[in-house]
Length: 227
Image (cartoon, rainbow, N blue to C red; front, top):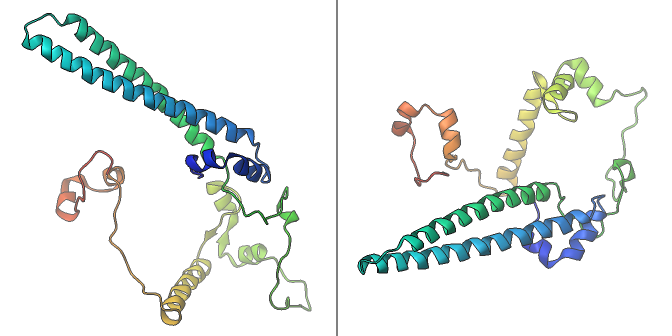
């Protein structure tokens, strides 16, 4: 996802780049508008916080002087309500901005040609000579289906097109390729294979872990509502 600061500082470049990918550049203008609204609401919220703090001091001073502070207390309530309203508006704007940014593609290099589909891809380099057969070779998807090592139909129902369920020797072959690549990097290219500690968010812990016994088997790095 593109950084909003980068979009603000390089607006025309970003608009031209996403347009070359078939995206309406007006989406960038819309993102900037949402961002301006978001920042304006943040400023208003901070101003209300400062105002509330100042009123709270005045309330304390009146109470020490044993003077009536009902008007200031009401003013504090009004400020708190304004802050609540601004926060709700801010969450709505941030949600719209997040949705918009998630649908704006990452930038491509300026040398990448524009094309409507993959059929317009330009071949830049080839390696080796294509193998010639004395018979008509089968497509890999037909061969995999015949051998019953990949299930395209079930994958399409589960996750959509262009995905696959590997099974039997297909799954074993996929696992073997992963292992071969890891061994090659470790043995021939100087990589050090490691298995790091496994960390996860609190929400994952709540869903997957047996809470009754988890304190005996799991460790908390930091206690907070979001971890």
